Image 1 (cartoon, helix red, strand yellow):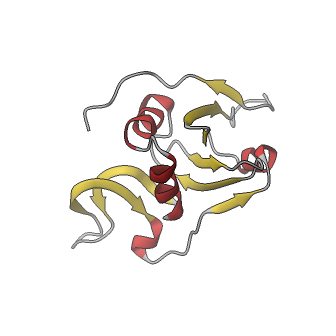
Image 2: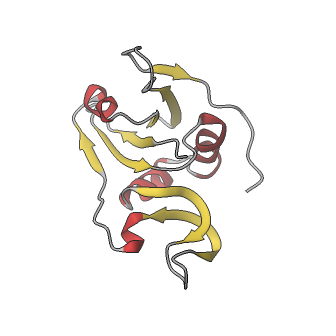
Length: 139
């Protein structure tokens, strides 16, 4: 089962450019991957520019004899690789950014990642800031 999330970069005017991320959106995985591999404004912008994705860090690809193959290096698995048109989404502010019903949201702001539990399956309305565990993952 997927743990859906949204990855965004905030601009000086408070607007956010973001991409949907389908698998393993928990801070214990996605948060740590973002902090380890996408820790500069340039890297985050490149990640989001690819649009919506299945995963931001995988060696799987949508190509191959059975629809899945292996890449030589870990990289994002964008839906555009299978012919879909899923560009990044622009939101004018955090309220718009948070309104899409993912389970977790991540915002890169002022050189740091901020994670939010969206409490999608609960009656809680407000996003809750959550800590991203320290330490890189094995991949």
